[in-house]
Length: 124
Image (cartoon, rainbow, N blue to C red; front, side, top):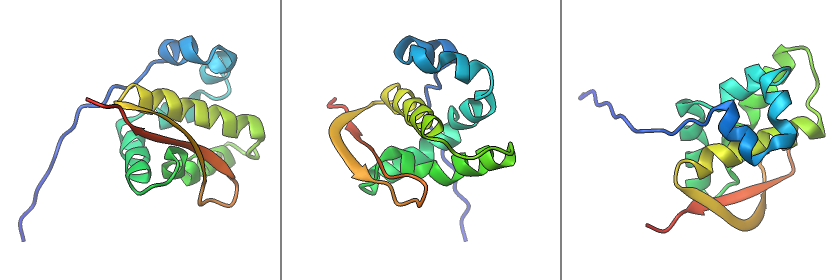
């Protein structure tokens, strides 16, 4: 058996970057949503959303369960606001890493989510 490793470069947006596009969620990202924001704005999450996208799912499918578990760990229930916030975080993360909205919504294969944006790679 041969062990292999790989590295990749990920652009991880700050709260300020996020707030420029989604002002309505900036205070939430700074305050009560900060743990979730930091969890999702990571190279690991980028890998998950990229894999989901390459498999033909909405990007949020890659981090849906991880997000739900974090919210439950905080003793909260997932709200529609949380789902919209998660979608906004994913949007900024993937757009800063070479993807763009396709204009298509697809079903998210998770019982607590319905539909999510499908992203595609930006033309080079």
